[in-house]
Amino acid sequence: MHRSRALSAALGTVCATALVLPITTQPAAAIPPNIPSAATATSRLATLTVAAESHSSTYDRDLFPHWITVSGSCNTREEVLKRDGTSVVTDSSCAAVSGSWYSPYDGATWTAASDVDIDHMVPLAEAWASGAWAWTTARRQTYANDLGGPELWAVTDNVNQSKGDKDPAEWQPSRTAERCRYARAWIQVKYFYALTVDSAEKSALTTMLGTC
Image 1 (cartoon, rainbow, N blue to C red):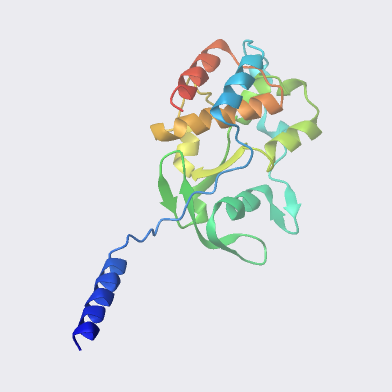
Image 2 (image 1 turned 90 degrees about the horizontal axis):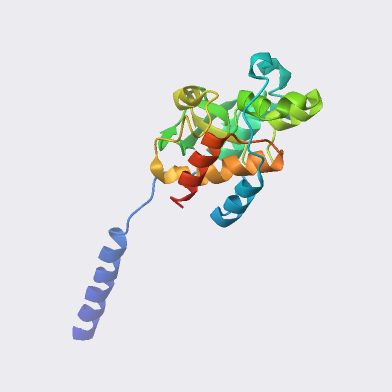
């Protein structure tokens, strides 16, 4: 009996300990693919051509066709919502009817797809002024719908609108902890598409990499 009571007490202690273990309820953020390390981003930034922006006056958003149909009835926006959301359910037209989305720029979580914008890491107008003005329409379409790199991000809609067409010298995520990854992703997009950076932009990116 004495041994049995001791065993029961030990089991009770184990159960009590198990009950107070923390439970994580917030879903982890889904992050776009192919973001380089800080070291790789630093080396790639050094290879980018530094030049003043040009052709800004001729920019037109329609020169970058989006959102295109990617698979079945799903367009690029809908694919990003599925890729970067948690427990996303879509209807027959591929519209997200439930799920949750964590916005890394500001740390907010949303349960309505209408509260989420798909941000182009390097905005279309910024890409245009950094060299995309010379591209074919087909290449601009590829750029605007690129799911293979860190170009498209599901973020809070008004945060995306606040960012607008600004580069890192003009706008950075309010979450300082996100600025390292933001700089690495920005550099990767510019590197992959052989776009230029201006001097203020390069300085801001260098400072952001310093937080990594």
